[in-house]
Length: 103
Image (tube, rainbow, N blue to C red):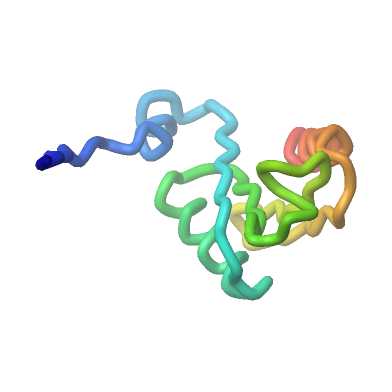
């Protein structure tokens, strides 16, 4: 069996080009990185996509992330301001993201 893949343009990288005034929040999930590495990779994603903020999290831990009710994330802004949201419910994480990014 042969699978041929064709590279596609990343939609997130096109949003600000099409609509510069749109507030864009990117998400970056990584596996098993240090806090510093996670923030650095997330900031690179923010710059690549021209996002206003990026929300980064480490999905390697079983008590948070994709298959858990809780999460811990970092919010990174264009000026590299970092806000850590410590482990809490995903509903509370969402509320804190909204509070921080819609100031």
